[in-house]
Image 1 (cartoon, helix red, strand yellow):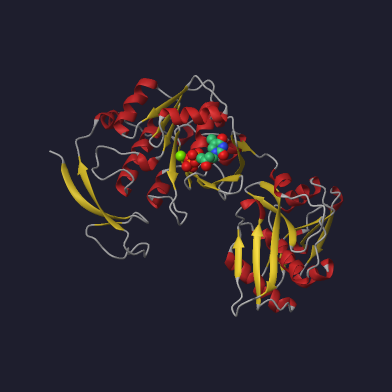
Image 2 (image 1 turned 135 degrees about the horizontal axis):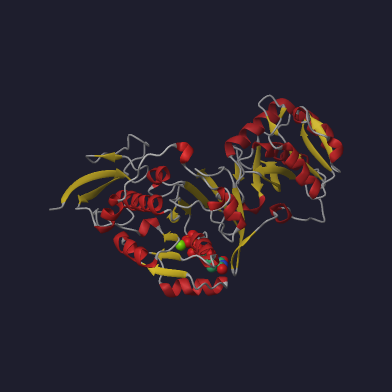
Length: 453
Ligand code: TYD
Ligand code: MG
């Protein structure tokens, strides 16, 4: 007989309790506990298959690791984000808001393997819908199978018949397993289904891609529980109204995090953007005030990006500060430094800051460009279009050194900028004569004024 018990889960953080509580002691959210009934069944068929395989201890020196064993997809951006290709037996979670392009990306990947059997399991769309999307993307593949199914036991049955070499599950929130009674999309279902596929991936060496939705707050729904379990978490970002999409690796057991893939959503699917700088910079004929260009690095890739600021007199008593793509706390800090160290009277003004292209930037090296854009807008004097910036601003107004400075300089050089302003502490081992671009070192924020205005 199947035994069942009732458990309460926080839908925000996945914490578990034996009775209902109003406020989650783990994440502090209110009203997030939901009752779920868990029924323990006899091990089902596939579980017996999985349980039947036993592993034995072997010496670490006897274990072979083969870097060539990574499976390269046709998508260079994805390969890079994954750390050089898909690792066999890895479980990769791809999160993102609805409509951002997760299914499109994974279908493109599935269709691009010409010699490998791929199984694309969909719980959200019908086979016809997937076919229509494939036609839109303009790819076809004899080895790509589409399975509309949400029950994991059935999926495993089809897997053993088809023997796919790559498995894609769209999405984890629609999957359910018979061993648990609660409805699909609940925390316990998500956890149990993901753990079944994790075991499957590890034992068969077949890589599994899980697509997951993101809640309004930007968390993966069914959140932390999944992040522990998977090897790699990729996050799909981008403003829906902009064409650019960014795939960011936020956890990767087999490569660097903070790696980035950039795509553009076109009419025929997602297109890789190998040279982001050329697209992210708007090529202007005229000089406008409030624009400065930063040489930033995401992961290991340098790119140039425009920061735009608008400083205007506040219409109401409390000045407004608002940002797109940049941390608002960091903006407030930079404004405080500007006010204190350079005597700018900005405290009573509205400040708006925008990173172009819908990108979110976490690299501290864009501080200098942000400050330059703010000063330029405040004085209404444009910054020369041929200057770019790379430096972090410290609390006492000093310009701090940043990592990968040589790459930043080379990228600016390559794109034909005349000058790059950097921290003077960054220039120890730099051979300036290597570059055409003039490298200008500065030490304090006040030096920046003198240089620019
Ligand atoms: P989709 O992959 O369905 O998003 P998700 O799986 O993350 O929910 O993306 C759908 C969006 O992408 C939809 O708004 C239409 C757009 N799109 C294009 O612009 N071009 C295309 O070629 C395709 C397939 C979709
Ligand atoms: Mg989808």
